[in-house]
Length: 125
Image (cartoon, rainbow, N blue to C red; front, top):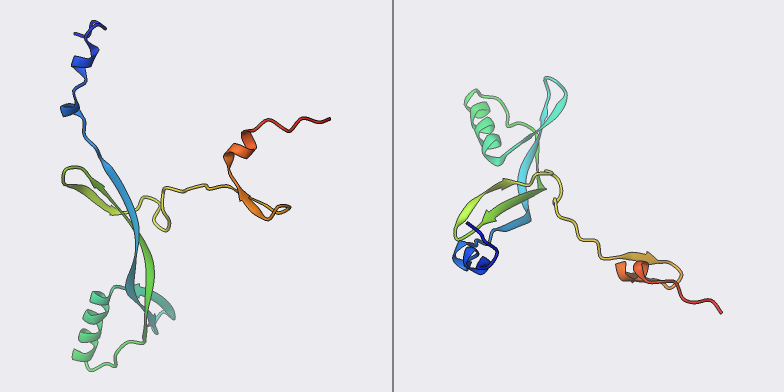
């Protein structure tokens, strides 16, 4: 029980854990395939496209019309003493962490930060 006198005994460094939350962006290839039957486009992974191409060639059909493209994919991971888990970033198409560095002052043509906004105004004479 905590009595307030020996509180430093209750909080030992051995009980603390550091968790790191990482986010990064990768470029992943994909194929944009035209479906002539429905006159639409669909995205396929390289593996799916290879499988479709093989099946169509086995059936004696021409290879499907496709364009190889890349897209940005945002991912995240949680790290402790070991890898704890991860996957796609929660917002999907952007980072969930954003850094605000300041605002642009068009008059002075420079960036300024939060401290300028929080200052007292200059005294008037």
